[in-house]
Length: 381
Image (cartoon, rainbow, N blue to C red; front, side, top):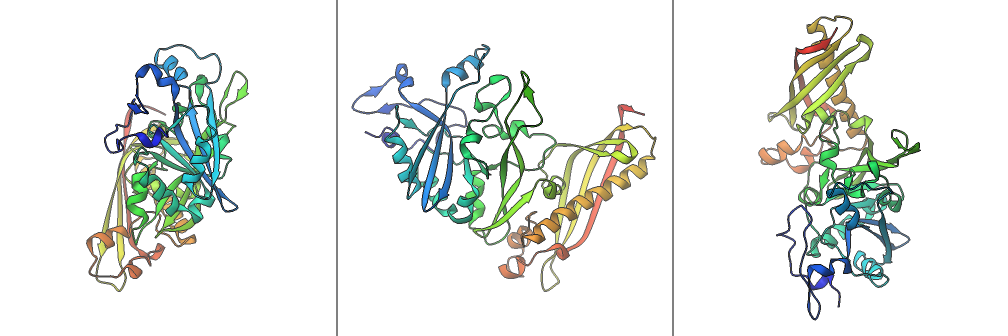
């Protein structure tokens, strides 16, 4: 009997943390038989030559228990990776189940990693599959990669910790500060996928082997290098991290950002930027006034640059960042900032969706940047 399908519908009731369920076969399995399951932590999905390829990542719970018990892992935590194929995602999972040494359990899946081929051509299949599986959770994280998904699943963490302690499983803790590509949950994808305006940015994963090493060996750490964009159920393209830099000033999600004007040897910490978007409704197409306000603390000023001059230079740089991302969105005919959602939600009777979707760089009627910077108590002169 398929244990995965014997579960009652606990999808809506499960918490974000890991939990144990009661399994039913012809008898009740007690907690002493927890080792009789293979607990998945992530699913990867690719599509090649008319077939879905499903990857199942399972972690060793004994390694996680060692971590929680403060024991030291002398070797890299083990990861089991399964691979199944089929004409549908369900068929690919069934293929994987039929060759598993232990029953596969998907109630702990915390992230999905898709290939670019899936988001180009098979997103509806993916959304339908997750929606009909009662144990897959809508608060799972979503990523895209052009790397071999198996390599992403077998990447490193620090100090031989389980893969649970990486950006794919805990993105909010890894990128809480000084990062501007927001993690995306499956629920957010579903809420926007069929929306007639705006865009969805799915974070892109790559394996970085250059910034960290341990024991003299380079660490293969999954990290973000940009995002893949969907709009109106269509794939629009990839945008690099460098071209998405303006997001950190407009999305109101970052709390602290560090900013350097290297030529003047000035360093500023920008805190909690706030954005206000005003829709101007007297034109044939919607225009927008965009205002960004933030406070900052001066951390370093080796050349003793005048404070007003620093504020002005920071404001110019913020505007340049926003314009860079506007240009990147124009290159793929997409509103990366989702500014047009304001007209769609609050001025639906003034313009049709086609006119609202005509958003481009010229739709910004006026941009106002206001940055106020103060000295910190110990800034460097």
